[in-house]
Every structure is written in C-alpha cells, then in structure tokens.
Length: 528
Image (cartoon, rainbow, N blue to C red; front, side, top):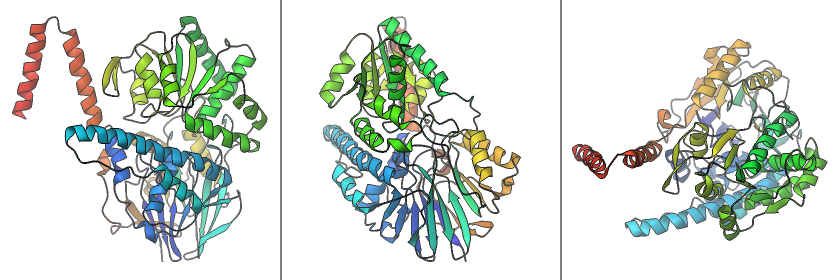
C-alpha cells in the first residue's frame, strides 16, 4: 500500500505550490497556489486543475500568500465542498487577500476585453471574482499551532510555526495505512527574521519531507535589523537630498508592514528626515488591520502596532489619489504593490518616475525570473511598462535582510533538525539553480544521498511508502513542458526585442539609416 503524491505547482519555480495526497481515507490538497511570473506560467491559472476538484475531501493550507492560497476560490467555484484547515491568522489574512485577488482579476479582464473588442477577439472571463472569493471563505476552519486534526480518516495533521509570515506553518502528516510521517515545510523563515519568531517543527524524524528551496543556493550574510535599517536610511537620505521619490515595491502582506516599522523607527530616532509614508495599496491597508489584531504573535508586537498607527502613515484609498500621488514632484516615500513590479499601483509610479535620475527604487523582496522587478535588479537600461518603452534613469538598490525565506544553510539546518529522513527529500518552490544548491547541502550534511533527493517537474506523481519512493508513470498528462516552467518566455523575448529595435532606431544617425534598418527587419519577417 502507498500514498499518492502529485506535485501540481511550484515545481522548479517559485509559485503555485499545490500538493495532492491520495490516501485510503480520501484526497487531501496541501495548498492551492496561483502561478505568477511570465505570461506562459500565469496562463496555467486558467487551465483545468490536474484533478477533479469535487474529488478533494480537504485542503490543508500553510499560509496566506497568493502563490500558496490564490486558487482556492477557483477550487470552490469548480465544486470543492470540503473544509480548508489553517491557522486563525492565515484565515484572517485570506479574508482580505483572496477577495482582493478576485477584484484584480475582474479589473484586468475588463481592460483586456476592451482591447479584445478593438481587435475582434472573443471576451475572456476572470479566473474568479471577488464574490467567488467571499464564498470560499465559508470553507475555512481555523486551528491552533500544535493541535492535531483528522482531515480524512486515517490521516492526522498538525501545524508548526514556520516563521515565514503571520500565521505561516509547516504541516506534519501522520498516515495510518501505511504507517508513515511526511513533513511539508511550507515557506520557512530565516533565523534572524525581522518580526517573526524562529521556525519550528517536529524532531522525531520522518519518512519523507517536502521542502521549499527558494534561496537554496544562497548563503546570505546575516543582516541584523539595525543594519537593515541603516541601509534603508541611506536610501531615504539620498532621495531627500535629490528631492526625488523613494519608491518601494512591496508585497502587501508582511513586507509592507515591516518596511513601515523600519521607516517609522528611523524617523522617530531622527536618523532620516521626517516625511509622509504613503501606503499605496488597499490590500496592504486591510492587511495592516489583521496585523494589529494578531500583533501578540510577533517578536515585538507592541512596536509593530505603534508604527502602523503612526501619524506619518497615510493610506492611499483609490486610483485617483494614487494617480495624483504619482504625478507629484519632490521628496516623498511611496510603498506600493506588487513586490515584483509585475502588477498593481507600483507600475504607475515607476512609469511616471523611473526615467528620473532623482528617483530611488528600493527592492526589498524576491524578484522572480521574467518580472519587471528582476529586470530592474539585473540592471536593465530600458524596460516596457504598460506598453510604453522607457529608459531606466533611477537608482535601483536591493536591501538585504527583509526576506521572509531561509537561505541555503538555514534550510539545511531546519531539515537536519527534523531528525532522520528515511525516504525521499522533495525539493520544490525554487528555481533550478536554487534546487541544485540545496540538493548539495542535503547530501553534504548527510541527510540523504542524491538518489533519494527528488526534483519534481510540474504534475509529476509519486508513490510514497515507509522509507521508500517510486515514481508513478500513471500520474496523468502534464500541463506544461518542464523545460518551459519558471523561465522567461516568448513574451519576455518579444518585449526585449521591441526595446532593442526602438533603441537602435533612436540611436541611428539619420532617417536613411533608420529606413535601412526597418527594411532589413521587414525582409527578415517576410522570409520567416
């Protein structure tokens, strides 16, 4: 007898985590995340699930981030009728994040359909709406860390604090038939997490472990909160001296609140000039209320609660206020989503000010392949925003120490602390370089030999037995070619080529040279 495991997301990339367990007592899904990044990857959100949603008996949710929870409303919309078990804080965060996700999809689809009508194309439907997300919240069942539940007969599960974000968890699974323990890490926080307590987990050993590998190939220098704030202070001072904007792309949940805490702390200690802090994210504003409710769970909850209610913090409510803010001149601090600059209000701010040498852009989170944030981080001189090409004149800086993810050594220590792993170690939620980096650490620490380390591809299926793993060739059809998942796609290549053409035309010495270049391009297209 074996337990089935199908990896339905975050396979050799960092979004869309979803693990389907087939047990004698029923089907259980751990997380149901949304794919983010290149358009080819995001297109998977519109495709059917690689299983029948009506056949799933329960969902076990590690935390509220959209790449782990974002397709739950779609799951419910398509027939799932079971409970969604998670911590109370995660439930509360999902109650603001999932409706916001639905609203964003409705807005984006409305804009897309206007373009489609002009192009003579058929209209498309959102993956789900804000109303769908509200309906999905009825299925949530909050629980406490450390409390055992039985989601289906023959399976017990309990949640351990993962130290990644408010309410985040690793999930321990105990199966009766066959008798076996599996640990799913969720996202693991760093040892020096800015506001979260250190990650925990069972220590009795396990048959199998599914572990994230976001930063598995990195050995980051430990950055204490004071050093992180010092780095932020330099950028605030630079923007102030230049009388320019400090733009901080943030993830609306956790990262926005951490940055507000640091900025308020710096201003109260007179390390930076006083300034209004514009939180230009309705989701971040709503999530802030959840953080205030659950502040006791944080390392220094009183300081967080005080900072979030500081008079310098201004919540930007609507698009009109946001647009007006993006047009303002002079020194100001703007926090806006999304954290990877691939959506949200930050794009309008970047479009308005990215060309200006007085602008400072502070990147405070992970930037996935194919996102605008990654292009800026990698030093792109020109980018396209909302179809418009522009020169990058702003100062782009990455501030270390805000990451909610453990690095390679920390992941290795977390895994080793779980005790003996007699079966497989499954590396998910990481790009290929990160996965290989963590794999070397797993082998180097003697946790498992390479033949027991698995690097799943999308929709790959396995059979789990006590201390043993078999690949399941009957796992069904895969939704995408493994080599395409998580990499820049043709949309990225098209945008890069367009920028290259526009730059060549601008730099050409005269109109005759431009005409020759365009003629060559036409002939190349005609020959294809």
